[in-house]
Length: 469
Image (cartoon, rainbow, N blue to C red; front, top):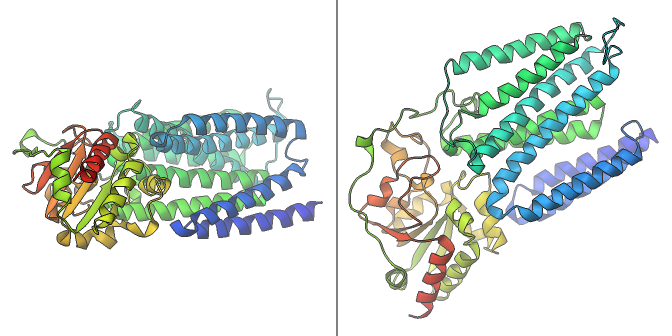
């Protein structure tokens, strides 16, 4: 039976690898999800036959409870809440790693719950795996909860600095490593294991709290990678090969995605890992640097007339489109414009929205063709030759201050060059600042027109006006 289980785990791992490969393209993403699901089914089915893990009664109880909780969360959570949900699920993965590592430690320790002085010889490899699983899992759990709080608005989305931030984090991290070495050498020290757990949980809070709202999509991607690494460490703790492989795949793919997003924001990976080590423009923006001037607005009838005379349009989606659930109205707008022989494309910034790929998922839900979704590096040179750009609920990713204002928190971040187009239409509810908490000087540019209103209502009105022309 053991050889059958191991072979099944190997087959499941192959499905995981092909699943990630197919997830690399929107056209094959569904096939990738299917392959990954098959791999997970095989892994779970094989685990059900491994009586060393748990009894069937507990497996069934856990499956039912987890399925009900997941089903309710998936039904109740709106599309705008998906970033928060992803952040929370990352944390659950880290929390599970801590619980498994602690349970394995206590199960093996003959002195638990009362110190009887019995000898405890924990193999070095298992001891290292338990400590790393607790450390990574603890940072992932509390870090993800802080990220969830920032996205939900429970915790401030601003950069939060505290005295001796980096020396304190370094001290705590080195302290955990030193304590971990001590536990590996003297595994009976239960109190030190609990201390490592507590410090790891505190580190997660301290590392994510200084990350500002503009960097939050990168933080979510990094925490996803952490949850994979924590799962891989738990695989070593349990001696489960498929968990080691699956966790390593999630960790590696998460790091690669994080590096891509760091490049898109002109941030170093170390900057994000260490919780804002060298945030560009972290100084407060003075009132004298706030953009000033006259703002011009346009209504739906005027905008419809403007669009009736153009030949090319680029749409820039942002979180405001997600909040307004306007993706289907936007899809209708694309259909209407294309019937008038107007070329329409979408420009997707790598950190648009609140999590990686947020805009791609929303537009895919509205059946927008993949070939109309262009990444920043593929479309940024075309704004010069575009008649109209329609920005829907995006703010920080189109703010020209990122190019020249060294006091801005987003200074140095590559942006979509929407201000280079002949006319820029910005759909927003108000003139309020974006998620990074800074004003947008684009609103005051001579070629910019504000189209105020809820994204869904505003685009629907625009569609009706164009049809009436």
